[in-house]
Length: 341
Image (cartoon, rainbow, N blue to C red; front, side, top):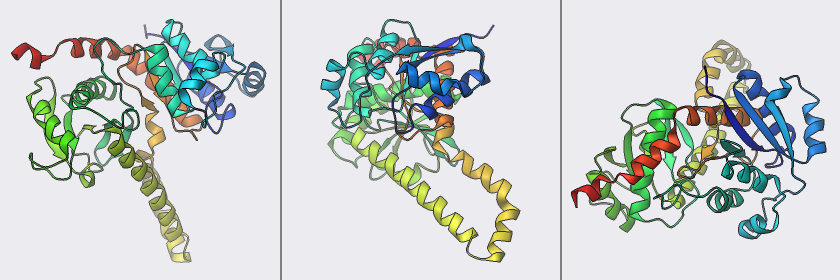
């Protein structure tokens, strides 16, 4: 019998709340009858959206939360003051084990603070990274960190490599995933101080498949499955990725619409092109988990629509089924570098 999963969904977070958030929840439960969603938000608004859809009533519950943490609010102050906000109440459900996972398109800062303060870190985890899957020519790669820790230490990156390897092997299904560190060249002696100090530690780590440095231009080719870097570098990579993809899609569309001949050509390749572009759609892979917490916390894009919310909820089920949290705890507590000391 399939294992069930319960997800506390921040119904008020993001640019398209609550409409697209609620639709994503309905789509998820209609796809999988082992998923239970708690829609945490303003009850009257959430109920009004739910009335638009048909679904199994026992799979969705509403948890009333009258307050909302807005994107521009100082995260620490907002978490402390708005105890009745959808974000805080949903995270508290994960802390109290009333839900297995949390998903939100809301304030990144508040999710990062709330995840660590409310849900808490796993024993031994120094800093949880924000970890989105990014599309590549060979499938997907996991980027750690993309926004949580701008100032990082070598020990952080080593932990991220280990946790990222566990995630990719168990959730994505890539055996013995290749781990690389972002650098300005492939030579071992290159890089800034952080990279130079981290490289030998990764090289000596026996429970990961470290393949060395990776330059930014090789990331889209899929030369590594797990990519580690500090959050400043990771966020630049992620935002450039998203911006370039959007620009290229716009240019391709413009080229196809430029003449009658090109429009005919577009019709001929429409099916193949659609399949190709779908593989480079980040929303297909769900949100970015904050790995290393005592419960699953997933951040989606602020402008997330129903498809991304649905896929993020489905992502939570795989995370629980494969016992990723337990495997990360075991990996972090066993440090082969310390065994050799």
